[in-house]
Length: 234
Ligand code: SF4
Image (cartoon, rainbow, N blue to C red; front, top):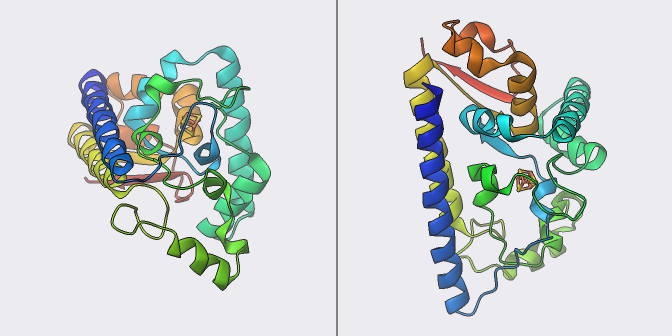
């Protein structure tokens, strides 16, 4: 069952990569610049979302040191979640106190590039990477307006500076992955990438559900939207 789900997600990855190439080419063709390049990891400091299927596909490819980094990162996120009153404060605290994705290597590149989730693939920055790490809540309204005035509103996911089309296609692909998971298990799970990886690595969610244990019993009853959105369709 997981094999089919993983193959489906990987097809979506390939399709999205092709689309990103096309969209980048089109944007550059009309005079824009895509600022993403090897070694630039601005967007890796954001909260990274993925589907459980993508986490299950990635988990067997992790090294011991990556696994340790994921456990440490997930523990810090759980503590911050306990201390945060809402999603906004969780996101701010995780960015300020936990740091970037634990899968970012010492050269600033993604150590699991071939397996990165749809959400990572879809981010194509039309402005300097400085804007990917900027905490917009610290800007004055004049600075925010100056930023928005620079955006190509026909191309970006306004008011962000990321190309819109890849994000729209990635979200649609995620929803298809979620629908397949619901069909297979009666429950669909999406959430924070390090957290979902930690869940798979510690609880072996995929193995337990294959052995016949209902997914609903395997997933802990976490209700924090910071980590996990589990949709029970029974
Ligand atoms: S999975 Fe890779 S691309 Fe995605 S946030 Fe982590 S290091 Fe960056």
